[in-house]
Length: 83
Image (spheres, rainbow, N blue to C red):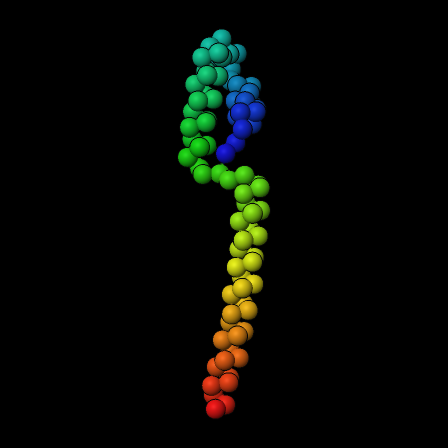
């Protein structure tokens, strides 16, 4: 999930695009925009880079084990065909 600092930066960028007349209601708009951004971004199910790296490592280890098991299975199948 994105942190508050990132949400604040997004909110500020959107505010910069507002016409001057609307900047008068900036405070109310900021509050609502930040709330909406947090709500919508939390629905996207982001994971941290650390969690992604951990899961990537788990996947690599699992893949290596699968490849080793496939090799053993092929060797066993060859053994059975020879007999």
